[in-house]
Length: 133
Image (cartoon, rainbow, N blue to C red; front, side):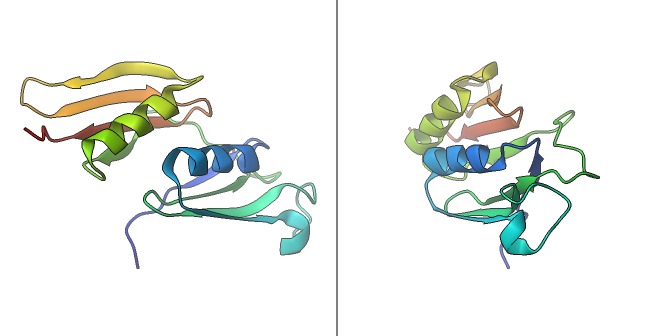
């Protein structure tokens, strides 16, 4: 068993969002729509389950009729030290496209680098790394 895997419910754009995360992080993406999952609580072409496996693992789906779509308040998905500095910097930059940088990725007084952003899907990220010098 791996560690914690966030499971995000999207407001009808799960396929687009999960494909975006695959383009940012790499890895393998599997999508299963409602029709193939035998679900009838949403449109047949809606995503019933999606799983991104790779350097960053995420799961998600289109929110069902009785589900709320994800809203990120008071938390971030943290990628502190999960890859080398250039990879984490690239992920930060790519997640920021059409999103909003809250605090730029920068060196902090204690010597580490970190920054925060909200991506185009409203997901909040904290990304950082130790100084490699």
